[in-house]
Amino acid sequence: MLRYLARRLAASALILIGVSVITFGLTFLIPADPVRMIAGRSASPQAVENIRHQLGLDKPIPVQYLNYVTKLAQGDLGRSYVQKTEVSRLIEARLPATLLLMAGAIFFEILIGLPAGILAATRRGRLLDRGVMIFSFAGVSTPQFVVGLLLLYVFANLLGWFPLSGFGTLGHLVLPALTLGLAGGGWYSRMMRSSMIEVLRHDYIRTARAKGLSGPKVVLVHGLRNAILPVIAMIGLDIGIFMSGAVVVESVFGWPGIGQLAWLAIQRIDIPIIMGVTLVAAVAIVIGNLLADLTAPLIDPRIRLR
Amino acid sequence: MAYTWRRLSKDPLALVGMATIAAISIAALSAPLIAPFDPREQFFDGLTLEGAPLPPGEPFFLGTDLLGRDLFSRLLYGARTSLVIGVVANGAAVTVGTLLGIIAGYVQGWVGAAIMRFTDLMMAFPALLLAIALAAIFTPSLWIVAMVIALVNWVQIARVIYTETTALAAREYIEAARALGAAWPRILFLHILPHLVPTILVWATLGIATTVLLEATLSFLGIGVQPPTPSWGGIIFESQSYFLTAPWLVFFPGIAIMVMALAFNLVGDALRDALDPTQRGR
Image 1 (cartoon, chains in turn red, blue):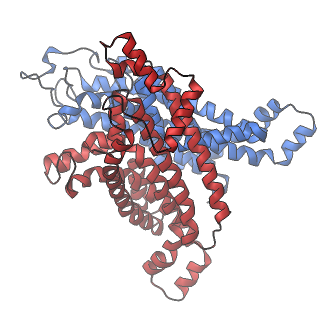
Image 2 (image 1 turned 60 degrees about the horizontal axis):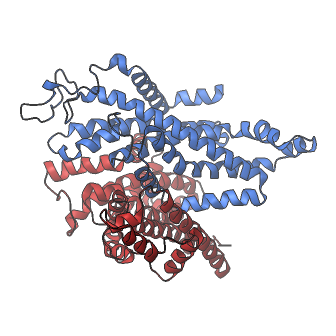
Image 3 (image 1 turned 90 degrees about the vertical axis):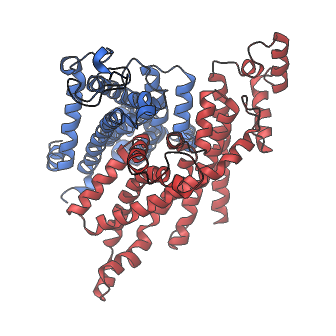
């Protein structure tokens, strides 16, 4: 177990180094000169050269990369070109909103996905099963911004149940979380359905039924325990996806999270923020994957990590 | 092949999906013939007296947009954008993913390891963020959007193809071919690739759905295909701020995107079941 963990952590570290190289490389794709952006248009050539020197941008590229990584190791993500604030501060300030949205989204995914998947599995091939499958396909086939705008129109504009956009109360959270939860719920229900169908084929389920347990009890107590594994793994993956993937939803609902920060930075070509958010998202994805693998043996002791 | 077709034609969802894809393709191809109006013409009577877009009715079947252009005609031409990007971007992603996966799976050694570690890296990279950043950096044209999408979408295919190739490469008939002195390109393309065709077919179909959604998302953020080329995501982007008063400008293109992605997802999923040998006879 410890050995497994050490190997996975080492692999994760390598992946993160790779990600840092790519994000660093992105800087050179950008046609605009960052120094000019900081200095402003009216700056004298001397002032421009001074800033370039201060930022270390006049050094050879490998040296620049080493400087960048050394600072990263100290938790320094650099300063925003536009706001002049430290990137780590900006990300920290927006982390709670993103985590809240993530929790809400996962709540809806489970609330929608698990019951739908279980019902579909126990009524396989019937009308309800077909309905759940079509819903889940529709969920994964509709772009998030369409779902978001639709929900806004119906529940905020027509019915007035929830505020149009913003942040602060529980009411603000419902629609953006539901938007993410509907699409994810589609994936969850498909995963839950196929996993449950697989589990219900086993002999021990037949034994449970034979000794007279009621249908729901067999499914929920004996079946769910084994069938839920792949779904839990999906929650781990979701943590990574939502760290960066909520860009669209956050922009539709004006949710002040990391996705919105990234989107604002991309529009202003504020490179340090883009690099910082990308790295944080990559770390979240790596941790999410690791969590997904590590929780497996907790639920099913037969699984051994090697 | 005939068997697969028979299974596919018994699946009502697959039939609906295929019919939808055929209908969208025909509509996109013959857009100049079907479209009642020029999608770029700003009609003088296409706006209300106050200058607001017209709701669905006569003569503008689905209403008009903020500039008084016919929404239905713009949707028809938008289908072309979505289909072209869907086919080109996904074609490129499938080609790159298949080539890298098959080479990594067959060659193994450090070449294979390097390719697969690179795909690990790409899996950990926030794909949507990367696509958005790239699309924002380059001034997006149709082809650049297609390339950006291909750049983030080849990874999963490469992994699937890799896994299948390693399994195939260990089979006896491959060993036999090697013993007979067949060169590796011959083995790869004549003996391994044909067995991968079902997998490639499934992923190519499902990939179009992913691609259409990603293109719509980029266009919705204003960094997809640029106006005046009509694109479904772009129409929603342009009219976003008016959508409470003119919701049809969001609903109709939104439904169009959903229907197209849904059709490819349904067919891809049915194809996977139909081509799966373990599902035979069930």
